[in-house]
Image 1: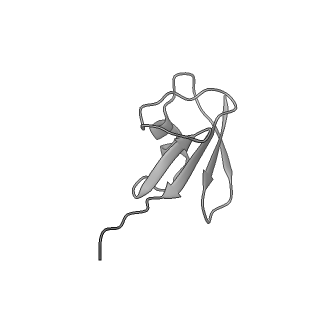
Image 2: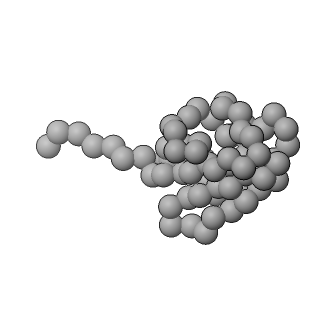
Image 3: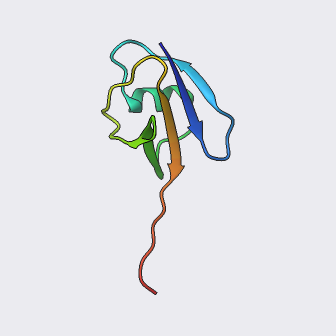
Amino acid sequence: MKIKVLKFGETATEVDAASGATVADVIKQTGLGEHGYTRTLNGQIVFDSTLVKDGDVVTLAPKVEGGNN
């Protein structure tokens, strides 16, 4: 199944994932790096353990953190 992976500042990547693949599996296939990013699947924030299906879009967005000054 084809999964599109978007990472801000990078070119979109499409991977061929096996049935039963998770968001984490797809990210590992891309080699884009796993840490410091919020994961969304089709626009919804998800866990790495979330299953993907054909045609899904995984997006990696830098985590925004901050505090009081």
